Length: 165
Image (cartoon, rainbow, N blue to C red):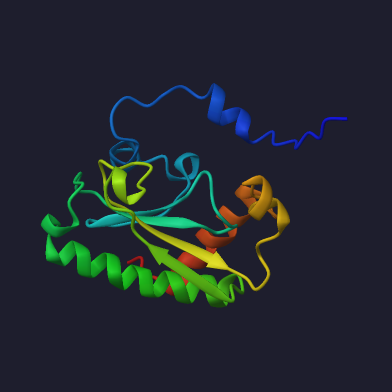
């Protein structure tokens, strides 16, 4: 008997039309935040949910500037991203009760970046015992909550943790 893991949300991944150019620049230049799952945006960068998250609540902080070189990013933008990361960690810990948070940037294709042409910082909430045999053995993740539900929860928390004025 063959085991089937039902994942209807992946249908969008295989049927959705391809975005021409950089997906992050597309998000940066469009204002339909709820459709694109943008949590926050300002003049330096934006925070967006990862569409294929490692854990519920996984989001990214992305500069509007299209660059693959962190070393050439404007220092004010980098410092702003870092400040948002601090606030994001607090939001994940207090707002959705994450036990910990992984923060990371994969720079360049050789560094593991899935979208290497535009730098981005991941914030991945973690819980004790949040990995299980299916992650370790089958290289498959089980997402324990509805993506839209967690997006709405985090979006609602933004004003409490980040000055949106």
